[in-house]
Length: 555
Ligand code: CAO
Image 1 (cartoon, rainbow, N blue to C red):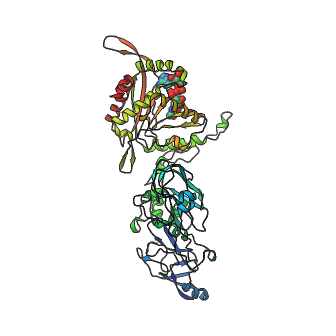
Image 2 (tube, rainbow, N blue to C red; image 1 turned 30 degrees about the vertical axis):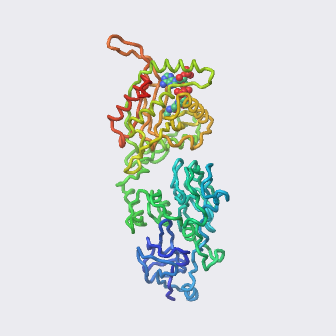
Image 3 (cartoon, rainbow, N blue to C red; image 1 turned 135 degrees about the vertical axis):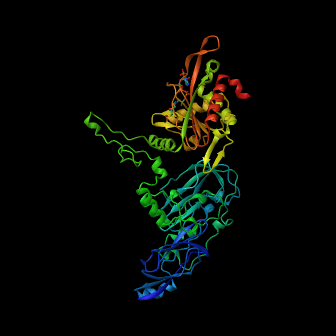
């Protein structure tokens, strides 16, 4: 038996990092490499492992203490005297302080050296994260269309001992994301394509994030590198206000624990230091859900999927039927689009308090104008349908009622000063919503042309994420098919959608006689958290008035 000191191993240049979790207590038996404490800087957390197996005799640190390489963590009683002697001298589990990530260095050499971003698209890759390949993506911190600053975190990756955020080496707009949750990434894995907007690239030596960590006493090849080194190796400069601020605070081991139990950390209230989520918080969450006193957002949103046991407490399970008993059947897999759009539609339907207003627009004159336009422009090959006029009318209505051109973001409304209008397109594989960008700046012919190109791309399964992102408001037109009214589901994070059915000639009283008028049925669904019923009625009336007399659009 020997009493040894267990100290913080070499964690590179990062001294004075705060202890945010103490994972053991006096009397606990720990294994070698078992995590003892979690420390955190402003961008990464890492667990400090024990160099030896033994029994914790005395803790020498407390929550909130600042520690550095060599700080005494605890006294451990160990049976192995020989090992104990060396333990105090050199922690076996010393994390390898690999050279810090140099995001720009992983870019094409030309752009890394340049002071300004090239105007063309730029692929952002995972920088040097030491010896650790194949770490899992656990959080996507940006989405397509987001504008990011150089050094802003793009994704969080996690190994079994550490999590870290991977920063962008350039400023720009995210054109596409090349990773998804759960993907395994390593140095050089492409993360995203950015369209340069003229921001400065991170020059390898300029930003703190790219300054190399001073070479450690232990060479990386000599030690079985604990993953904690990854965290230390890639600490980017702090970016106040980046999305990471909203992430639930929990150490990698708690994240793993939560994941194993299927607990959504975002819904767990942390009781630890600075609101950090502890193991007890996760356990309490599970207990509360199990006793039925709490429904998670995911549960609320989850369908009682066919064949499942019923996802809503108190609801009957989904009926399980042996259909073959009643006649011949065949089973088909749902298409990828159907699965994705189904999950999105379901979430939107469950989460958004929808209300739908129905109205009619008198499009008698507009239809005559449309037919005339198409006749005049027969040779152009561009056919104008009613939908193009509705897109223009939607822009005008969004300008007049800006709360329809908004998105909810926590307690805030994001008001958009751009006008991208989506339209639902029916394809053999399911429903997609391509987006006409900057519809306010385009004329009816250009919108018609783009719509027919996007609709073709949709049918051919060739729409890219950029074609379907950034929408402010959507129109779902079943006018070419039929029907009278329906209840379109809002395409989150938009707050309203206009559903349109087939126009029909109806008798309308003009004060003296019934006149045959071409009436277009409108169904406007809106998010009652953002929009009031009176505004929705006004929006519908205004939208209909534009279609009834399109000259009003220039007023
Ligand atoms: N009333 C009467 N006729 C209409 C009409 C309306 N509201 N809207 C379109 N039409 C006519 C068109 O004028 C065209 O007639 P002609 O062939 O005689 O010229 C015909 O119907 C077919 O139009 P279209 O559907 O090809 O063109 P569009 O611009 O109206 O719509 C698109 C394009 C891609 C939106 C459409 O093809 C489509 O996919 N619609 C389905 C959307 C959908 O599935 N929504 C449901 C979502 S919720 O599940």
